Image 1 (cartoon, one colour):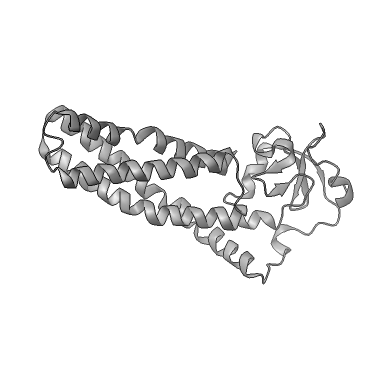
Image 2 (cartoon, one colour):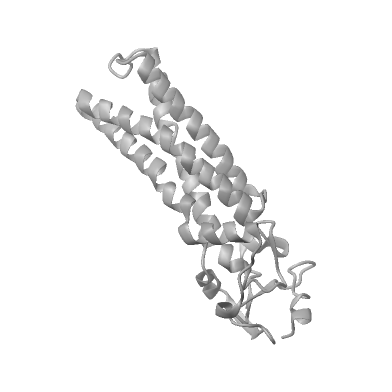
Length: 230
Protein backbone atom coordinates (compact mmCIF):
# COMPACT_ATOMS: atom_id res chain seq x y z
CA UNK A 1 0.00 0.00 0.00
CA UNK A 2 1.31 3.44 -0.90
CA UNK A 3 1.56 6.24 1.68
CA UNK A 4 -1.14 8.25 -0.09
CA UNK A 5 -3.54 5.30 0.06
CA UNK A 6 -2.74 4.73 3.75
CA UNK A 7 -3.85 8.28 4.54
CA UNK A 8 -7.37 7.42 3.40
CA UNK A 9 -7.76 5.02 6.34
CA UNK A 10 -7.96 7.76 8.96
CA UNK A 11 -10.70 6.23 11.13
CA UNK A 12 -13.18 9.00 10.38
CA UNK A 13 -16.68 8.79 8.93
CA UNK A 14 -16.83 5.05 9.53
CA UNK A 15 -13.58 4.28 7.72
CA UNK A 16 -11.06 1.84 9.23
CA UNK A 17 -8.11 3.23 11.20
CA UNK A 18 -4.78 2.01 9.84
CA UNK A 19 -1.29 2.87 11.07
CA UNK A 20 2.07 1.81 9.72
CA UNK A 21 5.16 0.73 11.60
CA UNK A 22 8.40 -0.71 10.28
CA UNK A 23 6.93 -1.21 6.82
CA UNK A 24 3.83 -3.03 8.10
CA UNK A 25 0.27 -1.70 8.26
CA UNK A 26 -2.02 -2.51 11.18
CA UNK A 27 -5.76 -2.09 11.67
CA UNK A 28 -6.27 -0.35 15.04
CA UNK A 29 -9.96 0.36 14.51
CA UNK A 30 -10.99 -1.82 17.48
CA UNK A 31 -8.85 0.07 20.00
CA UNK A 32 -10.56 2.60 22.23
CA UNK A 33 -7.27 4.49 22.28
CA UNK A 34 -7.74 5.19 18.57
CA UNK A 35 -11.29 6.51 18.80
CA UNK A 36 -12.16 8.57 15.70
CA UNK A 37 -8.70 7.80 14.35
CA UNK A 38 -6.80 9.83 16.95
CA UNK A 39 -4.50 8.50 19.66
CA UNK A 40 -3.88 10.66 22.77
CA UNK A 41 -4.81 13.69 20.65
CA UNK A 42 -1.35 13.53 19.13
CA UNK A 43 -1.13 10.73 16.56
CA UNK A 44 -3.58 10.21 13.73
CA UNK A 45 -4.57 7.11 11.84
CA UNK A 46 -3.32 6.94 8.28
CA UNK A 47 0.23 7.80 9.34
CA UNK A 48 3.55 5.97 9.49
CA UNK A 49 4.41 5.82 13.22
CA UNK A 50 7.88 4.32 12.85
CA UNK A 51 9.66 7.46 14.05
CA UNK A 52 6.99 8.42 16.60
CA UNK A 53 7.20 5.00 18.26
CA UNK A 54 10.70 5.83 19.48
CA UNK A 55 9.25 8.42 21.84
CA UNK A 56 6.18 6.49 22.98
CA UNK A 57 5.85 5.26 26.58
CA UNK A 58 5.37 1.76 25.17
CA UNK A 59 7.13 -0.29 22.55
CA UNK A 60 6.00 -1.59 19.19
CA UNK A 61 4.82 -4.79 20.88
CA UNK A 62 1.41 -3.16 21.46
CA UNK A 63 0.76 -3.45 17.74
CA UNK A 64 1.00 -7.23 17.85
CA UNK A 65 -2.53 -7.43 19.22
CA UNK A 66 -3.89 -5.86 16.04
CA UNK A 67 -4.33 -7.40 12.59
CA UNK A 68 -1.58 -6.79 10.06
CA UNK A 69 -3.44 -5.90 6.87
CA UNK A 70 -0.74 -4.87 4.40
CA UNK A 71 2.78 -3.54 3.94
CA UNK A 72 3.82 0.04 3.27
CA UNK A 73 5.60 0.62 -0.01
CA UNK A 74 8.97 2.34 0.18
CA UNK A 75 9.07 2.43 3.98
CA UNK A 76 12.53 2.07 5.55
CA UNK A 77 12.82 -0.35 8.49
CA UNK A 78 12.69 1.12 11.97
CA UNK A 79 16.39 0.51 12.55
CA UNK A 80 17.35 2.78 9.62
CA UNK A 81 15.16 5.76 10.47
CA UNK A 82 17.52 8.53 11.48
CA UNK A 83 17.14 10.48 14.67
CA UNK A 84 16.35 14.16 14.78
CA UNK A 85 18.66 16.98 15.86
CA UNK A 86 15.65 18.90 17.16
CA UNK A 87 16.05 19.60 20.93
CA UNK A 88 12.51 18.40 21.66
CA UNK A 89 13.18 15.14 19.84
CA UNK A 90 16.40 14.69 21.80
CA UNK A 91 14.54 15.14 25.08
CA UNK A 92 11.98 12.65 23.89
CA UNK A 93 14.70 10.13 23.11
CA UNK A 94 16.24 10.70 26.54
CA UNK A 95 12.90 10.10 28.22
CA UNK A 96 12.25 7.02 26.13
CA UNK A 97 15.63 5.62 27.20
CA UNK A 98 15.45 6.26 30.95
CA UNK A 99 11.70 6.19 31.73
CA UNK A 100 11.79 8.48 34.82
CA UNK A 101 8.05 8.58 35.44
CA UNK A 102 7.29 4.83 35.16
CA UNK A 103 10.27 4.24 37.44
CA UNK A 104 9.35 6.87 40.05
CA UNK A 105 5.62 6.07 40.22
CA UNK A 106 6.37 2.83 42.08
CA UNK A 107 7.63 4.76 45.12
CA UNK A 108 4.51 6.75 46.15
CA UNK A 109 2.14 3.91 45.29
CA UNK A 110 4.30 1.33 47.07
CA UNK A 111 4.76 3.55 50.12
CA UNK A 112 1.02 4.23 50.30
CA UNK A 113 0.21 0.53 50.16
CA UNK A 114 2.78 -0.15 52.85
CA UNK A 115 1.43 2.68 55.03
CA UNK A 116 -2.11 1.34 54.69
CA UNK A 117 -0.95 -2.15 55.65
CA UNK A 118 0.83 -0.83 58.74
CA UNK A 119 -2.19 1.24 59.74
CA UNK A 120 -4.46 -1.79 59.40
CA UNK A 121 -2.09 -3.84 61.55
CA UNK A 122 -2.18 -1.08 64.14
CA UNK A 123 -5.98 -1.05 64.17
CA UNK A 124 -6.08 -4.83 64.55
CA UNK A 125 -3.28 -5.28 67.09
CA UNK A 126 -3.19 -1.92 68.85
CA UNK A 127 0.61 -1.88 68.61
CA UNK A 128 1.80 1.77 68.42
CA UNK A 129 4.90 0.78 66.42
CA UNK A 130 2.72 -0.11 63.46
CA UNK A 131 1.07 3.30 63.57
CA UNK A 132 4.43 5.06 63.80
CA UNK A 133 5.71 3.10 60.81
CA UNK A 134 2.56 3.97 58.86
CA UNK A 135 3.10 7.67 59.57
CA UNK A 136 6.76 7.54 58.50
CA UNK A 137 5.84 5.76 55.26
CA UNK A 138 3.13 8.33 54.58
CA UNK A 139 5.55 11.21 55.15
CA UNK A 140 8.09 9.77 52.71
CA UNK A 141 5.27 9.08 50.28
CA UNK A 142 4.28 12.77 50.29
CA UNK A 143 7.86 13.74 49.46
CA UNK A 144 8.08 11.15 46.70
CA UNK A 145 4.95 12.49 44.99
CA UNK A 146 6.79 15.71 44.10
CA UNK A 147 9.50 14.28 41.78
CA UNK A 148 7.08 11.66 40.49
CA UNK A 149 4.53 14.30 39.48
CA UNK A 150 7.28 16.43 37.92
CA UNK A 151 8.39 13.45 35.83
CA UNK A 152 4.78 12.78 34.86
CA UNK A 153 4.31 16.39 33.79
CA UNK A 154 7.50 16.12 31.73
CA UNK A 155 6.19 12.98 30.05
CA UNK A 156 2.84 14.60 29.34
CA UNK A 157 4.48 17.65 27.76
CA UNK A 158 7.18 15.84 25.80
CA UNK A 159 5.52 12.60 24.71
CA UNK A 160 1.92 13.77 24.36
CA UNK A 161 2.24 17.50 23.61
CA UNK A 162 -0.03 18.28 26.59
CA UNK A 163 -2.88 16.33 25.03
CA UNK A 164 -6.05 16.29 27.14
CA UNK A 165 -8.36 13.29 27.37
CA UNK A 166 -10.07 11.26 30.10
CA UNK A 167 -6.91 9.31 30.93
CA UNK A 168 -4.77 12.37 31.53
CA UNK A 169 -7.61 14.17 33.28
CA UNK A 170 -8.09 11.33 35.78
CA UNK A 171 -4.36 10.94 36.41
CA UNK A 172 -3.76 14.66 36.97
CA UNK A 173 -6.85 15.27 39.11
CA UNK A 174 -6.37 12.13 41.21
CA UNK A 175 -2.71 12.94 41.75
CA UNK A 176 -3.61 16.39 43.05
CA UNK A 177 -6.27 14.96 45.37
CA UNK A 178 -3.92 12.22 46.57
CA UNK A 179 -1.22 14.75 47.38
CA UNK A 180 -3.67 16.94 49.31
CA UNK A 181 -5.05 14.01 51.33
CA UNK A 182 -1.61 12.63 52.14
CA UNK A 183 -0.34 16.06 53.14
CA UNK A 184 -3.33 16.56 55.46
CA UNK A 185 -2.64 13.17 57.07
CA UNK A 186 0.98 14.10 57.75
CA UNK A 187 -0.01 17.56 58.99
CA UNK A 188 -2.63 16.20 61.40
CA UNK A 189 -0.25 13.54 62.71
CA UNK A 190 2.46 16.12 63.33
CA UNK A 191 0.00 18.52 64.97
CA UNK A 192 -1.63 15.85 67.16
CA UNK A 193 0.92 13.04 67.67
CA UNK A 194 -1.56 10.80 69.53
CA UNK A 195 -4.38 11.36 67.03
CA UNK A 196 -4.57 7.64 66.21
CA UNK A 197 -4.65 6.63 69.88
CA UNK A 198 -7.67 8.66 70.97
CA UNK A 199 -10.85 7.35 69.40
CA UNK A 200 -12.56 10.72 69.17
CA UNK A 201 -13.99 12.66 66.25
CA UNK A 202 -10.57 13.75 65.04
CA UNK A 203 -9.47 10.12 64.93
CA UNK A 204 -12.23 9.24 62.44
CA UNK A 205 -11.38 12.23 60.26
CA UNK A 206 -7.77 11.09 60.30
CA UNK A 207 -8.76 7.54 59.31
CA UNK A 208 -11.01 8.84 56.54
CA UNK A 209 -8.20 10.91 55.09
CA UNK A 210 -5.79 8.00 55.45
CA UNK A 211 -7.84 5.28 53.82
CA UNK A 212 -9.62 7.68 51.48
CA UNK A 213 -6.48 7.76 49.36
CA UNK A 214 -7.00 4.19 48.16
CA UNK A 215 -9.47 4.84 45.30
CA UNK A 216 -7.42 7.74 43.95
CA UNK A 217 -4.23 5.69 43.97
CA UNK A 218 -6.06 2.83 42.25
CA UNK A 219 -7.44 5.18 39.59
CA UNK A 220 -3.96 6.55 38.86
CA UNK A 221 -2.56 3.05 38.46
CA UNK A 222 -5.47 1.87 36.34
CA UNK A 223 -5.35 4.82 33.95
CA UNK A 224 -1.57 4.56 33.73
CA UNK A 225 -1.96 0.94 32.68
CA UNK A 226 -4.52 1.89 30.02
CA UNK A 227 -2.20 4.56 28.68
CA UNK A 228 0.66 2.09 28.35
CA UNK A 229 -1.01 -1.11 27.24
CA UNK A 230 -4.28 -0.25 25.49
